[in-house]
Image (cartoon, rainbow, N blue to C red; front, side, top):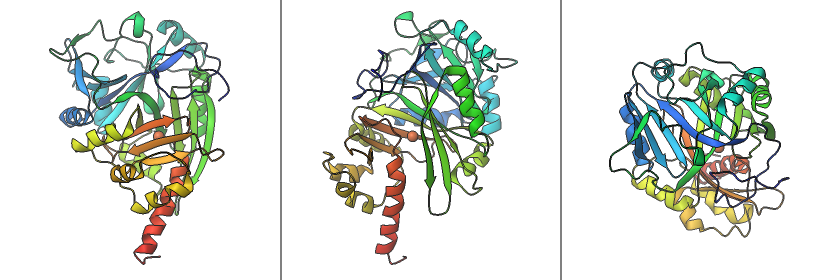
Length: 368
Ligand SMILES: [Fe+2]
């Protein structure tokens, strides 16, 4: 944590300082993620169960903006669009996402192109009128400069859903915390360079995670605002979960979308009540929390009941985060709900803790 955080819109209540650095383009958080699916109704249902409300609809096309706190999910069901083509190729998918800039988007686009960015031959069917460049897996990366006091990127083409609260609190999600991507083996350097070159991202963390049988490497690419975080995963093991994803998705793309909450218990309990399914965690994980993280101050019974995971920095064990992952929800894509309490990481300690808890469970069952 080197620098003071700059003022920026979404993380009003981040509960922490974030590491920031030179930000010539004025990167300022994620604006939205765009989704598509061969059967869009499934996604309408999913977003509602996660506490989102439809707040805006496109004037002439079948595109809906779902919102909860500062999180916007665009559901693009326009049958004649880039999104529909993307869904035909990948199945249910995250076909685009948007980063906000405090500089004019056209200026940013020109700079990105100068830095080696690529554009689409035809981007006429994009969901909002903002410049786009190619992201990982050829998804659309929108460059948005109309937000906050500058207005809204939806203004020109979208109308409010009748009777809807334009700023619903939903189940407490507040902003998009990170978008983790899965890459083909060997592509890590290419894509981390891409984000460094185009947007002045930095690699703030590197992990080499070894499970019992497979492993992966992960680079946490972070934008200068300290908020736009794009971790990249790669695995050379053909049986790894990363390569399973690549097979299922038929390409590189977003593995999970992490959304921040100020009260993870409340958020998860309300999602569970709506039938959102989360990854299970053995009870043995919760039995050793006190040993792993002394004086954590959390309600362990409530953590255990909801299967919420806790992690802390290895040095001081005082910078904590709480997190939980959903089951695969959109094809092989899943969601993470995260509450940071001074921790800028991604829950690395939980990989090892989960591995050990499964072993303890196996020992209890007499398997090991
Ligand atoms: Fe994550």
